[in-house]
Amino acid sequence: MFGGPGTTWRDNLATFFKGRANSDVFRMTIFTPLPGSKLHERLAAEGRISSFRPEDYYYGKYVIRDEHNPRSVRAAYFGLQLLHYLLPDTLVHAAADSNRARREFNRRAYRGAFEFVLGSILRAGRARS
Image (cartoon, rainbow, N blue to C red):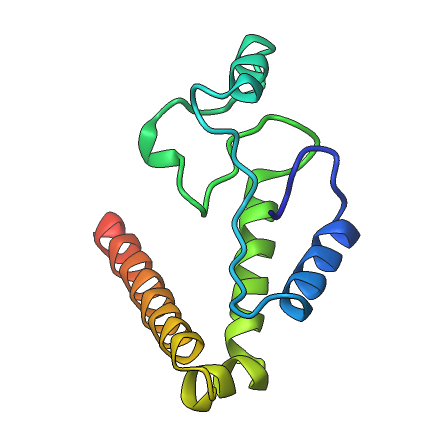
């Protein structure tokens, strides 16, 4: 999990590198308390949830009101995702990993990341038109 309440950028970098080093297939998501959970209810009661729209509860949003700047959290998160996909070991796992399941998972992750980024660019372009 990336960007949880009370974490620092150093904590998030450590999570990124430890997660990569200790995972067969690495995935990272922004910390998001799910609606209906006790944490979400507590934060909502304290006025610390910035959105209750379902579309804001996906891996690229930061919905907690705290010391973090949501745009900075999102930018750092996507920057680390980009770094992950550009690192040579990630490319090797997708292209030639000896474990077929890992290889296929990583190929699908690349495709999903590409489609997400391309879709985001296209949506942003349409919004400006």
